[in-house]
Length: 116
Image (cartoon, rainbow, N blue to C red; front, side, top):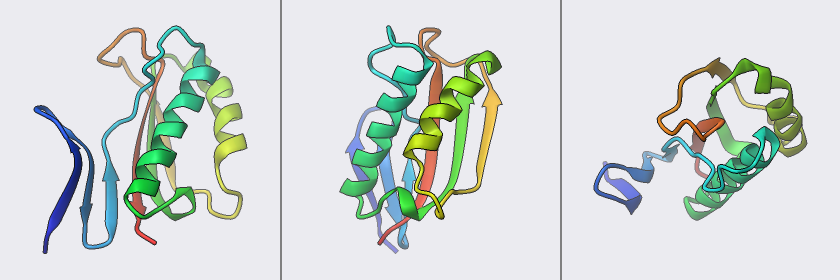
Protein backbone atom coordinates (compact mmCIF):
# COMPACT_ATOMS: atom_id res chain seq x y z
CA UNK A 1 0.00 0.00 0.00
CA UNK A 2 1.15 3.47 -0.87
CA UNK A 3 2.14 5.98 1.79
CA UNK A 4 1.48 9.58 0.78
CA UNK A 5 3.37 12.32 2.62
CA UNK A 6 2.50 16.02 2.55
CA UNK A 7 4.74 18.96 3.44
CA UNK A 8 7.85 16.79 3.48
CA UNK A 9 10.83 18.39 5.16
CA UNK A 10 14.34 17.35 6.07
CA UNK A 11 13.31 16.23 9.56
CA UNK A 12 9.61 15.36 9.28
CA UNK A 13 6.48 15.38 7.17
CA UNK A 14 3.47 17.31 8.45
CA UNK A 15 1.10 14.58 7.22
CA UNK A 16 1.27 10.90 6.27
CA UNK A 17 -1.68 9.09 4.73
CA UNK A 18 -1.88 5.30 4.61
CA UNK A 19 -4.80 2.96 4.02
CA UNK A 20 -7.38 5.71 4.62
CA UNK A 21 -5.79 6.94 7.85
CA UNK A 22 -4.29 10.42 8.25
CA UNK A 23 -1.42 10.92 10.68
CA UNK A 24 -0.43 14.48 11.60
CA UNK A 25 2.88 15.52 13.08
CA UNK A 26 2.67 17.37 16.36
CA UNK A 27 1.28 20.83 15.66
CA UNK A 28 2.57 23.88 17.51
CA UNK A 29 1.87 27.59 17.36
CA UNK A 30 4.03 29.80 15.18
CA UNK A 31 3.12 32.85 17.27
CA UNK A 32 4.52 31.86 20.64
CA UNK A 33 3.82 35.30 22.12
CA UNK A 34 0.18 34.26 22.58
CA UNK A 35 -1.27 32.82 25.78
CA UNK A 36 -2.56 29.24 26.01
CA UNK A 37 -5.91 30.15 24.43
CA UNK A 38 -4.26 31.90 21.48
CA UNK A 39 -1.74 29.14 20.91
CA UNK A 40 -4.42 26.44 21.17
CA UNK A 41 -6.65 28.25 18.64
CA UNK A 42 -3.73 28.56 16.23
CA UNK A 43 -2.75 24.91 16.62
CA UNK A 44 -6.33 23.72 16.05
CA UNK A 45 -6.39 25.89 12.93
CA UNK A 46 -3.32 24.00 11.68
CA UNK A 47 -5.09 20.71 12.45
CA UNK A 48 -8.19 21.83 10.51
CA UNK A 49 -6.09 22.91 7.51
CA UNK A 50 -4.00 19.74 7.36
CA UNK A 51 -6.99 17.43 7.79
CA UNK A 52 -8.89 19.22 5.02
CA UNK A 53 -5.89 18.94 2.73
CA UNK A 54 -5.74 15.19 3.47
CA UNK A 55 -9.45 14.63 2.77
CA UNK A 56 -10.63 14.56 6.37
CA UNK A 57 -11.95 16.86 9.09
CA UNK A 58 -12.29 17.10 12.86
CA UNK A 59 -15.41 14.89 12.90
CA UNK A 60 -13.22 11.99 11.72
CA UNK A 61 -10.48 12.22 14.38
CA UNK A 62 -9.68 8.75 15.73
CA UNK A 63 -7.31 9.84 18.50
CA UNK A 64 -5.69 12.97 19.85
CA UNK A 65 -2.74 13.53 22.14
CA UNK A 66 -2.24 16.94 23.69
CA UNK A 67 0.99 17.99 25.35
CA UNK A 68 0.92 21.12 27.47
CA UNK A 69 3.93 22.76 29.09
CA UNK A 70 2.17 23.32 32.41
CA UNK A 71 -1.03 21.72 33.75
CA UNK A 72 -1.99 25.18 35.03
CA UNK A 73 -2.89 25.82 31.36
CA UNK A 74 -5.29 22.85 31.26
CA UNK A 75 -8.51 24.86 31.86
CA UNK A 76 -7.61 27.50 29.26
CA UNK A 77 -6.70 24.87 26.67
CA UNK A 78 -9.92 22.94 27.39
CA UNK A 79 -12.04 26.08 26.96
CA UNK A 80 -10.72 26.53 23.40
CA UNK A 81 -10.89 22.78 22.70
CA UNK A 82 -14.53 22.59 23.85
CA UNK A 83 -15.50 25.44 21.51
CA UNK A 84 -13.69 23.77 18.58
CA UNK A 85 -14.41 20.05 18.90
CA UNK A 86 -17.43 18.69 17.02
CA UNK A 87 -20.04 17.66 19.57
CA UNK A 88 -21.09 14.05 19.04
CA UNK A 89 -17.69 13.40 17.45
CA UNK A 90 -15.40 13.98 20.43
CA UNK A 91 -12.38 11.73 19.91
CA UNK A 92 -10.47 9.63 22.41
CA UNK A 93 -7.93 12.03 23.89
CA UNK A 94 -5.00 12.13 26.27
CA UNK A 95 -3.54 15.29 27.77
CA UNK A 96 -0.19 15.27 29.52
CA UNK A 97 2.19 17.84 30.92
CA UNK A 98 5.44 17.78 29.01
CA UNK A 99 8.55 19.85 28.54
CA UNK A 100 8.23 20.90 24.88
CA UNK A 101 11.19 21.31 22.51
CA UNK A 102 10.64 25.08 22.27
CA UNK A 103 10.14 26.55 25.76
CA UNK A 104 7.92 29.30 24.28
CA UNK A 105 5.42 26.70 23.04
CA UNK A 106 2.62 26.07 25.51
CA UNK A 107 0.78 23.30 23.63
CA UNK A 108 1.43 20.64 20.99
CA UNK A 109 -1.33 18.51 19.48
CA UNK A 110 -0.98 15.20 17.62
CA UNK A 111 -3.95 13.83 15.66
CA UNK A 112 -4.81 10.62 13.83
CA UNK A 113 -7.95 10.71 11.65
CA UNK A 114 -9.85 8.71 9.06
CA UNK A 115 -10.19 10.04 5.55
CA UNK A 116 -13.71 10.90 4.41
